[in-house]
Image (cartoon, rainbow, N blue to C red; front, side, top):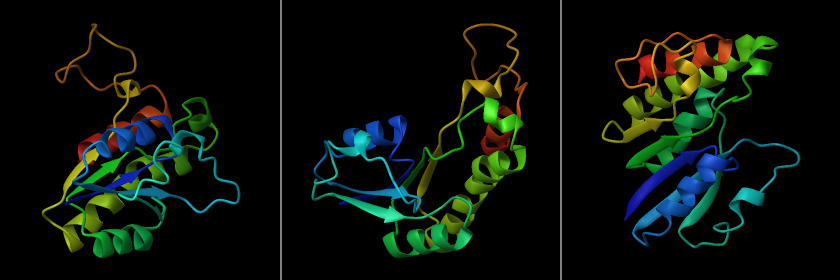
Amino acid sequence: MKKILVTGVLGQDGSNMCDFLLEDPNNRVFGMIRRVSNPNYVNCENFLENPNFQLVYGDLGDEYSIAKLVQEIQPDFFINFAANSFVACSWDMPGQVFDTNALGVLRCLEAIKNHQPNCRFYSAGSSEEFGNIDYAPQDMKHPMKPRSPYGASKCAAHHLV
């Protein structure tokens, strides 16, 4: 059975990925959420009761919680959809956005390196990495030219990976 740790499961992309992964009965999916006083599980209603799914708590801002999850779960795959994803807000709190989106990825990579080096890692990017585009559609050769702290944080995460 493959063990897969997915962050951002309360959001659209993370929940869609869990739906997809749970179609294979050989997948055991661990959905990471932050501890909040009033979590919204509406995107997760399809799979919360699936016996191959388990909610786990962690925070990209806390290297201990990420390391503990990787050490305990020993995932084969780590899929990161967690992010502070509000571009406009990134101008109001650029440090927090960079910490979550870029340093959070670094914390994930360090946990994998230290506790499960054979784990495969994916971290979602953003079109905001391209910013003021030179051509469309963009490809991997297009220069990264972010125009916001959010875009810069996703560029940094891309380079770390």
